[in-house]
Length: 433
Image 1 (tube, rainbow, N blue to C red):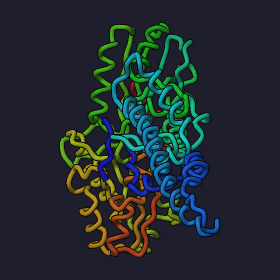
Image 2: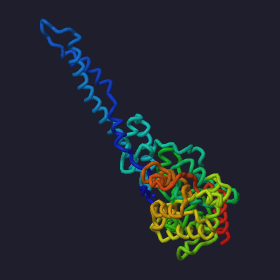
Image 3: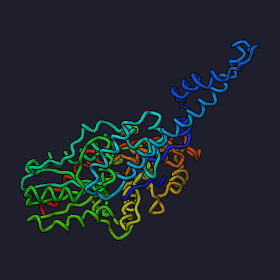
Image 4: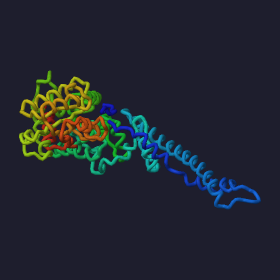
């Protein structure tokens, strides 16, 4: 499934059955008016007037005709209200922040709250759908946007792509930030997201304000920060990492020292055969977590039970995509013949869904466990990997008929303690440069 994101987010549009649901509602006011006016005029004015009972079908027919028109009018009104909200959502589904953004976010939520349940189901736009405001992704109050001032002279800015899934944001992103803060009590840890689309979503829906890169760097400068360490939570040296570097370079002269830590998988390497200590550590961490969550005592036990693990990343057109191939090399080199790396985008080619599925079937595995190779278990994990749509990995594997069972573990890398410690080490390495 290819979901629309600027960098990769979002949720699919609702089907026409939702529109039919909205159109089925009657308008009580219109029906009452018809009964009181035109229904009385339908009675014939003759000397030998028919009994009242015989005139009722005519009254009912007239009333029913007008009731249908009233219902249609009500449906038009419902759709107009829903369309207005869809337009407001589409207006904030953008990657550029302006002076109007805060007001636009507030207006979109106010308009959504004013809709009826029927109208909410009818919201459909270029990127808008009922899930934008309506989906329950957890309690946002458990998160910490880390946008406080009074930073001090030393700051660690943890930069993530971001997610609108509240529980995942707390477990994965906040989990990493908390670990870095605990390891560096004399430094102030702050947050920035690189996806303005996500920032706007969280702000509009949950009234949580998260800084983008420019806001976070400007906040650091205004607070008199002298020593800045930037720790990306990105998986690799990809497009998002490049954008981060450009943002930091624009503010470099505002601080005495600026140091950039490594993303999770470290250096990219020349080709698919090149691995490093970071990739080895990540491979060990994800295998241990996947095996344990699947209920096995060891990887060998899972192999004996004909179970294959698929670690699903996002995929990228960037040259850093070789990192996925390197992760497959790392897993194979340590004897994990039942571990496969895939990507939502199918780039590199060997990570495409059909290719991975055929490789697993050819190897003779009858059970499959899908798990994200993503820092955050957000939209891609919940929808592209484990969603109910026919083009999700879960649905595609099940529909193939090649496997006895297909399960999903919706858990981001950021919630794994060993991964958190790897980020802590990267931050320490950057400080000691």
